[in-house]
Image (cartoon, rainbow, N blue to C red; front, side, top):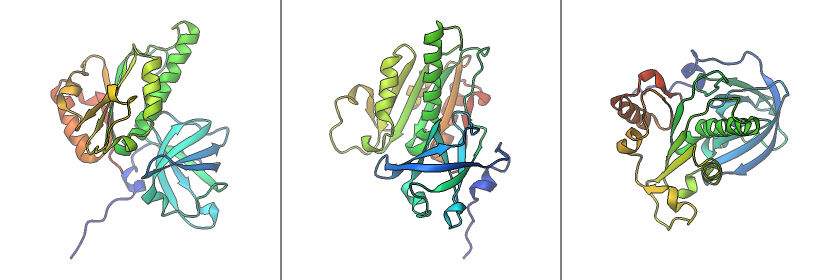
Length: 263
């Protein structure tokens, strides 16, 4: 019996941008973000930089055991990386204090210039697919803070809506800070959380933002303006394929629907 070999990350991203240089870094914190996801806090080289939404490859061979893994960057300065427990278990040598090397890559990012016209961002996430979209959300919030301090003279920022689906509220990563952003910028940020297998009561703070069941076609169609909307999708490939079709059927041009399917 033969089986189809699954392509590894290097093969899947062969045509994507990636940095030539490897930058030294040190893991300075590891914590459980949920029952299935770990958060790594990494001190990076001063020359290290990335665009919101890109991924980072970690080379952990300097820890005396060979290995390479790739996951999404969330936040700069002290980089925050999310990685599933099943992947992390393959690299037990990767601990607090470990010296690693990092390389950034990917063509999935949001990096507007001050002269760019405003777009309305539609961010659609499934499970740990929230990682790059949360990075984009944080970056947009930072740009809004810049605009606030300059009187709105820096960036043309439209609205940002996040539709995020997970099995239950425990697996809705970053939910508190997402809600905080929505409350800080109520005229700009909004979100709809979806849970598909919730069996317990929902926390009061989450109830105004929560729905039971999957993200619906009607919800996305209501958020699409073919002239202004730019959509970033990240989640399981079947979800991306189904929702991409919904967005296309809603009149959103194909070049305004951005996603990657290398996981």
